Length: 66
Ligand SMILES: [Zn+2]
Image (cartoon, rainbow, N blue to C red; front, side, top):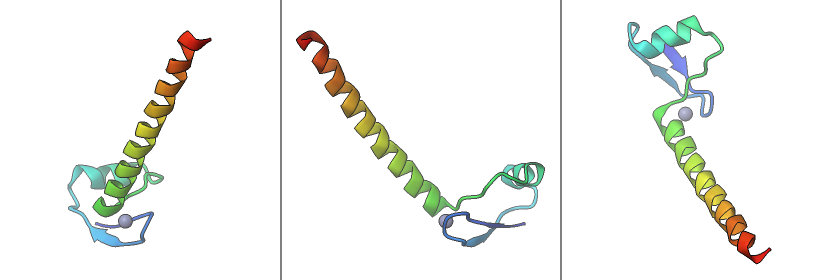
């Protein structure tokens, strides 16, 4: 089964009987992302979480001050 990455349009072949292939057939709206793009997204998400934690930390520091 051929799948196309939604981000870089790279076409990859996945095993017909793999779990991912079954999921993609079942839910046609489900999008496929190649490993490279998934990794990139994961890194971005981690960085965003780090930023979020940092902000949270700064806000907490304000509490005793108020
Ligand atoms: Zn990709």
